[in-house]
Length: 369
Image 1: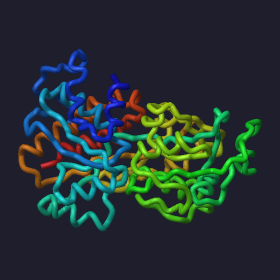
Image 2: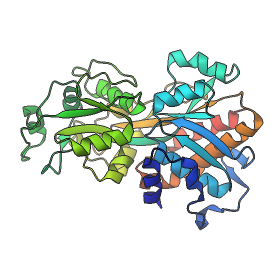
Image 3: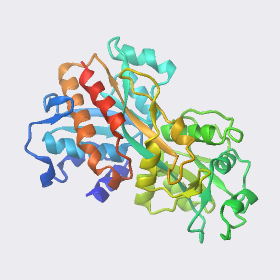
Image 4: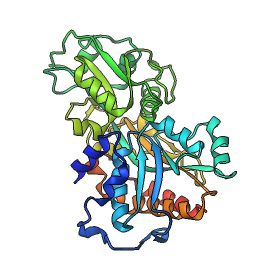
C-alpha cells in the first residue's frame, strides 16, 4: 500500500484526495467510524467533505498517508493537495485560495501580518506534522558508498569543490576510487523549504565554509536549478557527477543512491533510526501555539548514529477565522494525522513526531476556534 501511495503522490497532477478510497479493508482503522477519540478529546467527522491545501513537495507523500487514514475514519472526507512548493503554498494560503498550506519553512516575518489578515485578524499558526530526512542523492557509476560532511557539502554547493576526486572528498572516502568527474550540484529553482533546510544545516554544521545565508531560495550560486522534488530526481538520474537534495521518500521510490554524512563521530547512513535519533534533539523556538521548531541542535549534532540533515514540515492554519464547516474539517484531519496517521510514516520515508512535539501540536489543534 505504501508503494502505491508513494507512486500516486509522485504524480504531480494527481490530487491527493483520490487516495482516500485505497485501503478501506484495513481493519486497524474502523472504516465505518463517524468519530474518534484522541488526546484532545472526541473529534467528530463534521465539517465539509473536501479541504484544499497547497505547498511542500517534501510532505506530499505524508499528506497522502494522512489523507488515506482520514478517509477511513471519516468516509467521504479528503484533502485535495497541490504540491507546488512551500513558497507557493504559503502565498496561496495568504491569498485565501486554500484552506491550509503545507510548508517546510514557517511563515517569515513579512508574511505574518498578511496571514493574520487572511484569518480575519487572527494569528496564523505553524503546526509541525512530520519530519522528513533529506537525502543527498548522487550519480557516480561504480561508487556505491559515498561519504560527505558539512564542510564538503558547503564547498560543493557554493562551487569551491568542483571535482569528485578532490582531496577533501578522497580523505573522507578512503579506499574508494573517486573519479575525476565534474561535480554538478542540483538545486531547487523554485521557492523550497527543502532548500531552506539544507542551507540552515550548512550554516550550523559548516559556518566557516557557508556564509551565504538561508532561505527558501538557493544562495549557493553553483550548479543547475530544477523545479520540485521530482525535478531533482530526474536531473540527478540523467547527469553523471550530479548531487542533489531531496526528501528520503522520493529517493527510496526512485532507487537512487544517497550519501552518508560524517558528523565528526564517523559516517552516518540515512535510515529511519538514525534520522529519529537526530530528531530527538529538536527544540521549540518559543512558547504558545505557533509551533516553530529550532532545528539547530539537530543540524549541529555530533552524536554517533544520528543523521543531522532533516526538515520539519508544517501545516499553516488559522488559529481563528474559519467558517464552522472548514474549522471542523481541518481539526478532524489534523487530529487524525497526529494521533493515527503517524503509524505508517516510516514506510513512506518520514520520521514520526516525537512525543514532546506531538503533545504541543495536539494542544494547539484543540485551541483552534
